[in-house]
Image 1 (cartoon, rainbow, N blue to C red):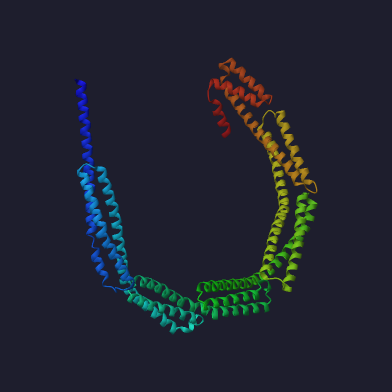
Image 2 (tube, rainbow, N blue to C red):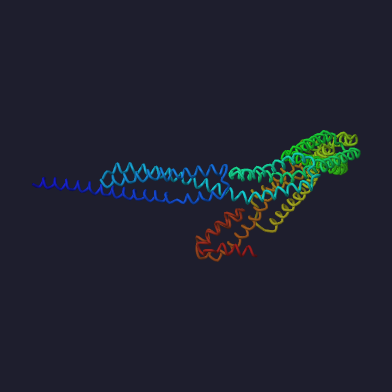
Length: 566
C-alpha cells in the first residue's frame, strides 16, 4: 500500500513540474511576443512619411528625384509587405502559444524578429540617406558663399601682385579657371537636384581654393629668393672669396667654384619647380642652397679666425721655442757641473738627452711650418691644427724639462738636508754622552756602550759617503736612514737607562726605612743594591719594586712621579 502511494505521489509531482515548466515557458514566450508587437508598432509609427515630405521642398529632379522614389518605394514595401507579414507571423505565434505549441510559436516569433530587423535597417537607411541629402543642401548653400568669397579674394590678390608670381602666373590662371568651372558645375548640379554631387564639388572647391591661397603665400618668397636674394648672396660669396685669395688665404681646397655652380643649378631647378607649381620641391632646393651658403660663409669666417690665431700662435710658439732652447742649453751646462758633484742615474741622463732632441725636432718642425706659411700652399685652418700640435709638444717637453731641473735642484736640497741631519745626529750623540756623565750612575752596561759605538760608526759612514765625489744620493739616503735608526734607538735607550737608575736609587733609599723591620726585606734591598752596582738597573728596579710593593702598595708610582718632577 505504501509503495503504491509513493508511486502516485511521484507521478503527481512529475505532472505538476511539467505543468509548471510549461507555464513558465509560456509566460516567457508571451513576454517576447508582446515585445515583438511593440517593436512592430514602433516601426509602423516611424515618421518616415513626414521626413519624405521635406525632400519635396528641394528641386525634384535628377538625383533628388531618383532618391525620393527609391526611399518612397522602400517605405511602401515596409508598410505593405514587411509589416503585414510580421503581423501574420505574430498572430500565428500567438495562436500556437495559446494551444501550448511552444516550438511552433518560437518558429513564428523568430521569423517575425528577422523581418523586424530587416525592416528597421531599411528604415534607418532611408532616414540616414535622406538626412544626408537635406544636410548637403543646407551646408552647400552656406559653404558655397564662403568658398566663393575666398576665391574672389585669391583672384584679387593675384591680379594685384601679379609681378610677385610672374613665373607661375600661367599655371595659377589655369588653376583659377579650373576652380571657376567647379562653381558652374555646382550650380548645374544644384539646379538638377544633384545635391550630393554638389556637396562633393563644394569640398573640392574648398581644397582647391585653399591650395591656391597657399601657393600665393609661398611663391612670392620663393620667386624672390631664386631671382634676387640667393643670386645676390652667391655674388657676395664669390666677391669675398676673391678678396680673401688676394689677401693670401689658401682656399682652393674649398672648391668654391664647383659649389657655386651646384647652387646655381639648384636655383634654376627651383625656378622650374615654381613655374610648374611644385612648391614643396622648390622649398627643399632653396633651403638646401641657403644651408650651403651658410656653411661656406662659416668656412670662410673660420679661415679668417684661423689666420688670426695662426699668426698669433706663430709668434708665441717662436718665442716659446727660443726660451725652451735657451733653458735646455743652460740645463745641459748645469748637468755637466752637477755630474762633478753628484752621480746621476742612466734614467736621469736619458731624460736630459731626450729634452735636447725634442727641442731640436720642434725647432725644425716649426721652421718647416714657417716656410709653408710663407709659400702660402696650405690653408690657415690646417696650419692652425699643426701649430696647435706643436704647442702641445712644447708644453710636454717643457714639463719634462721642468721635472729634470727639479731633480737637479732636489739633489742639492737632499745633500743639504742630509748634512743637516748628520749634524743633528752628532749633536744627539754628544747630548747622550753629556747625560751619561751628568747622571753620576755607577756605570754603563756593555750593550749600551756597544749601541753608542755602533751609532758613532754609522754617523761616520754617513760623513764618509757625503765626501765621495761624485756623490751618490741613493747610497747617502741608505746609510743616513740606518744611522738615524741607530742614533734614535741608542738615545732613547740611554735616557730610559738613566731614568731607571735614578728611580732605583731613590727606591732603595726609600726602602731603607723598612730594613730593620724585616730580615727578608733587608736581604732583598741588599740584592737590589748589588744589581745596581753591577749596572743591571732594570733587574735592580724589578727587585726593589717587588719588595716595596708588598709592604706599601702603589709606592713605585709615587716615587716615579717624584723622580720625574724633581
